[in-house]
Figure 1 (cartoon, helix red, strand yellow):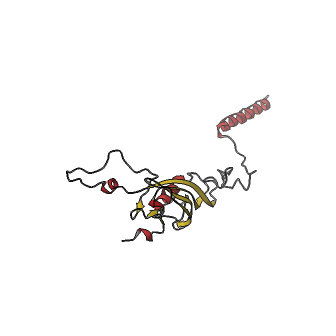
Figure 2 (figure 1 turned 180 degrees about the vertical axis):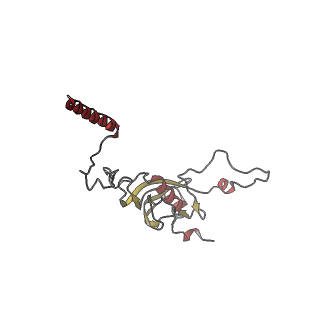
Figure 3 (figure 1 turned 90 degrees about the vertical axis):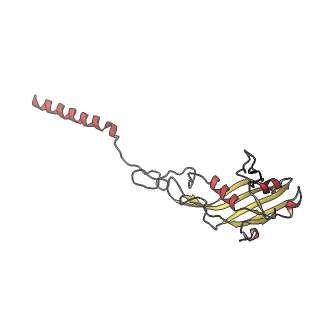
Length: 207
């Protein structure tokens, strides 16, 4: 069974968890977990994700306040150009100490009842400490944070003009590109006009 301290996402926090008011600085790269994004936008598994911030101890746990920066690969949703840039996200997460109640949570109390308090669920921004509070594992936090914050419609630039809908030319590189088109809504009127003009010319020749 793998040990918590062997995880590449484990941060030793036993010293700051000893009493409230302690602080531990974090400024390191961690490998990106799997499952962040897809082919359109995401972070490649194993890519270095920078975490810069600090763990601060309070009475019932640790608060992590940090900046998470990841190398994001994406495809512009307008012009389809590949995008590679660092994407930064601010995060605040809570790592609670395991209490006796938490340790007993889910166990049968001997009366056929399960010791779970109704309505109590872990917050999305709450993550467990490992090995009795000795380590904070950032794997789930990194995945959750980046998946939630990635833009749904990435753009190579805010004013990207996209592609020509008729021929696919990049309008950023050819801003004057256009096609001569006839509005099909007026095609019938144009045909009628041409027919009337032809009939008028024909009547004139017959006089």
